[in-house]
Length: 274
Image (tube, rainbow, N blue to C red; front, side, top):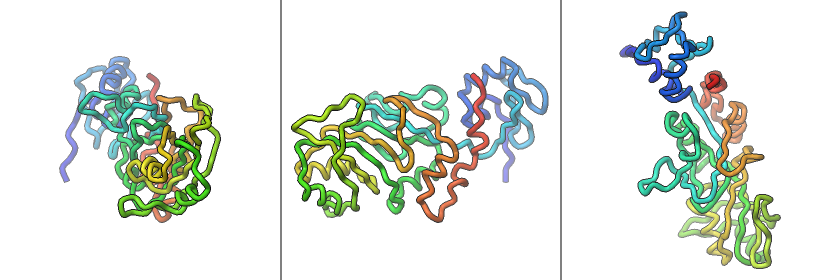
């Protein structure tokens, strides 16, 4: 197996997801980085990740697999759940500051339409994404949905039991009337608010089912993904999940090694001061 070749410190540390290369350069110039016990202040200095001991502010940086990160974002209306858009429209990465927006290479877990708002996970862990989006893992997602008119009891029961969409019958769902959200929406006589809990994530499923049942969606907001609720996060804000939250997210997936997917927890919790 070939040995790793020495690389510039800013590249090595950026690959670990600690900061952008520019930020690492600032750390170098400030004398905050040591290699094998010696302070390094040269921007061109190279280190061998297999042989050299690299420290930032006295903390040893482990090399190997990049750190795994999971973010919970409150996606606003009008923002695309993609990493880039060929037409220059705003994406979820545009909401994040460095190094989250580009350097760490985060990707959305699943989708949330541009005309929908609410909870969206982003991560750089492909294994985690696969588990959370695989059809056999029915992770519950909670939505607050405004629809035209007022569905009858029979209509709600039909939705709960499953609706045929182009040859596929949706899984049973939880559907009930609920108050309007407390962030700017109001109840009116010509519409109804529903609390919908889905256990699958087919493309635009809620909108398609509601349309087929005769009550088109006016607004759609995702409040929670599994045990993770938005809480006090405002539109456009995000927070970094703790390892135990990722473990709780994966707990329903019986037979999986949750902690192995988040194996860099010690590095994840290391956040050098700016």
